[in-house]
Length: 386
Image 1 (cartoon, one colour):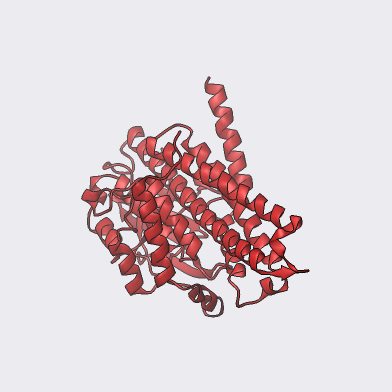
Image 2: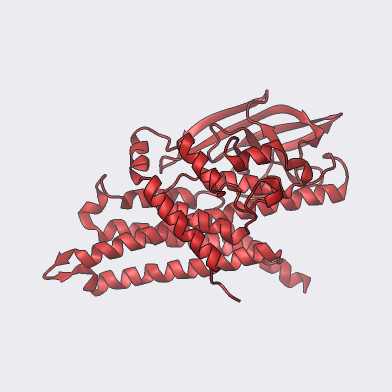
């Protein structure tokens, strides 16, 4: 299996890295810790949209760039490396969900999202300490010609200023995404701040009434039958997997950046007449981080290929890369702070910004324990089926 990026993806990676280096300063993130949240200025968001990155994995006929999951992961990885706000991955995930939901959703909303004039984000997680679609308790119930959505969501990334919430809700046939206008009667959004200065929020849906066709995943209404429900459930789960994968790619970019800056420091910082990178205690720790990064990279590309090919092991690989990325990002950023010594704790250096981003990312789209349980459950089911 070839895990190498194509020439086009390498060119995109290099272009994204140069763009973020020239147009996005980590000082924005540092300043946001005092005056949160960190946001992308409107004109910069418009530039990102015009580059085609918001709709990088959306079909061309729907207003996107027609890229695959691996291409989207390249953008997410570079955004993480640059500490660019998570809104890019959040809106990108929602755009792909709208694109996959059918022709009816490839209209003004999706075109506006890809063009940067509108925003949509997904809302999956709920109070209670469990993660993912299986933990969804929010309900979407048919009432005549209306769909009534009730429940609450937490950790909704980049919710403030969004136009549409793609809310994961339980229907009689499974879990589905429901398009809920952020300003609909009965929707209450409470903004909060992540440890890295990014914005999240709690969303409460109090008997929100929507058209029956607000459910994504089928052109049929919510009670159209098992086939429509199965389509909607599959879309909701694949969307969660995509968000998880892009979150892992973001964490990989954070780990790479932390490793690069710490390696450069270890080569320049001299103690006892030698660069500290020549000491085994330092070089071995950096080598361990490098191994973590490369393992995560291989798992990321494997998960991207599996998702693009629609393979049955795609969800298992997505969980595997999230586990690896969680561990790699935390180890890399903690090593960065510690190996910088006392200066690593100062406000002026970037290493604490990487640590904050890593800790925030670990608590997004499921922690390691959740994904290890998910891998075990999927592996057990696969063995039982054989």
